[in-house]
Image (cartoon, rainbow, N blue to C red; front, top):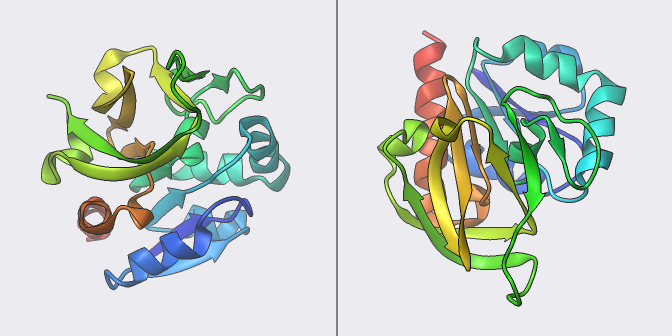
Length: 203
């Protein structure tokens, strides 16, 4: 089973790949839409500007390739990759629209942005992928967060001055605002849960 890590040349691509490889997952870091369309799992990582990343998805045909796997194999968005699963962002640009909702700047008053460092992830009743993982400390680096139109999509929340959605789930589509590849034992458990899901779907 090969998991495609979508290469938008933004973010910790190799760190994500290495974290999965340490779990004995076969990984292809790729810019080839056909490779994504054949994959048994898809990871969409990213750090940076929403509109630029959304444009890159459309320019390379990765948007259609990812859509071809939605509902077929597990798809995991990480940080900006989570945000790109939604329809649009206050930063501009149109996302994949896999999940209904928008991306908005964190409302944190006088607290510093970006929200950077370790913080608590608290799964909700609709925990999905995180049901196997539970609560824990994860590493964040972001100034925007998703606002799903359907509150049932939220699978975890985190508090930074105010609560924000830190993970989502809809069927085989999941996303986390934190960086599991930088989140130690907790992040490893998240990626283990994802790899188990890939293995189940590959049988």
